[in-house]
Image (tube, rainbow over all chains, first blue to last red; front, top):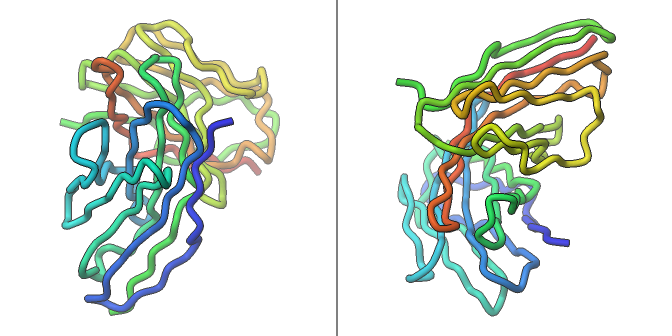
Length: 115
Length: 114
């Protein structure tokens, strides 16, 4: 069955540190990949997405992610985090093109930034 | 100009009650979803509707019944509420475009069953 793994459950960084959050998925076919962010008490917002083309995707707020097909990975990066990046980050994968294909979410990574 | 809206935002109720959560989107999307986020932040799809037709129905108790009166609305009715139903319920919508779609989420409904 299709699955998404986020191995880091809680990451604590100081402001200005660099960030990389891991995401691996298990599906051998065509995938659409997403990173969503959920600020405390708020809904999920799309950070970035990959459908096809350049595997290095740039999103909002200085985030980027790289799709490495051979590693089934879609890690999220940011060169210098800010206190306002404190949030829960979810990786998500959708397989195939059917409207009946589900988006599977990872379990989330909680990011805490020390001011 | 809210894109995906849900009502109510908070819902506190007793076990055994029946309650409904409403969702509306003004994005012109064809597909709408209900997700449940548990206390550990794990997010799981419950239902998906495309043009008012049910297309995804995960293993969800029969007490949960979605209803889509039109493609801009997807409501969730829950019968005989149980303690384990306490969670945040998110509605989302998308417009499939050649298989590439992005889901947009509502603000969530925080349900607490006492």
